[in-house]
Length: 369
Image 1 (cartoon, rainbow, N blue to C red):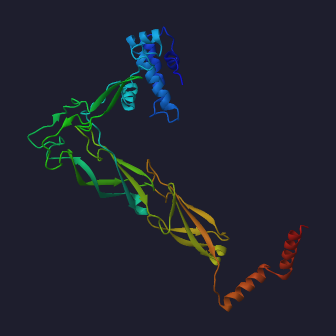
Image 2: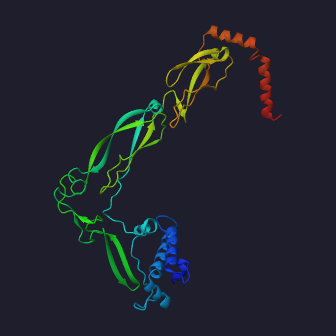
Image 3: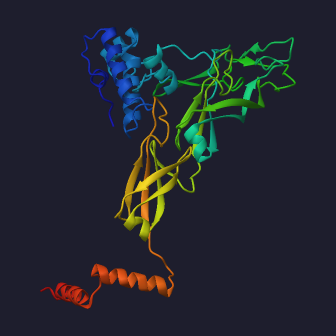
């Protein structure tokens, strides 16, 4: 498959200035960089744009390309492109100023996550508690250098402190530059000859840290609290990461929560529902009286204003919703049954004529009449 014209790849004319060529390349790189674009052909388009820019962005190589095209007069075959640099370096170039990452620069510490389970009412009213988390901290013996006290790391003689090695190959398809992490220093740019006896050259040690945590009132299941600076220590003077505490709330035996509102269910006897009553209802903080009107039906809701969960951000709190359920007695003595039969008779309920009428209507419904 023949290569596309480099000017066509970048979308510029042959009279384009170096600034125009660079601008066109940056636009393509932003679009097709594999860290940004996950399409199947993004990587190949990115490499194609990189190859075109390596040639057209160099005045000498551009002049040679304008004269000979893809044919390299020195090699007798196409190519001539320098594929030096990894995607990470190029990404930094386009989005962060174009300089190679300094392996000795300060680096922010890792964030940590801790899952904490609390009781229902603890989530409603908040609490203060201590948690113990394992994390890596800067070694107190070497202060993070990894070297034995009184000594210091040496600059890597292989990469000369850059943390990267470059391997250049001249092939029939052109000059190829591979850049990789230095194998001698593992990208650190320094070699530790006399390692610290405490951290063994790592510069960090594992520790258990106790953190005082303030859980705010009104927090809900799945909430995430951030504790700034309580993650792992940074490297080479970099800032510490953050600690994220994920809250899990245990269910309650009586209350259910929806947002800042509380729901509960209370039973009523037939007599209470029919005649009305005043019953005692438990809330999150106390017991309150609730008046049940005569003739209340099952599944009726009553609202207790301001008896719900405090708003997490702001003043006030939600409501408590009480659902009443009329409970049918499962066992009665003969006297109770007789009283109900009398009530039914006085109410005109369940007579033979009424039942017959109901059966007739059901029969017609089944027959489609």
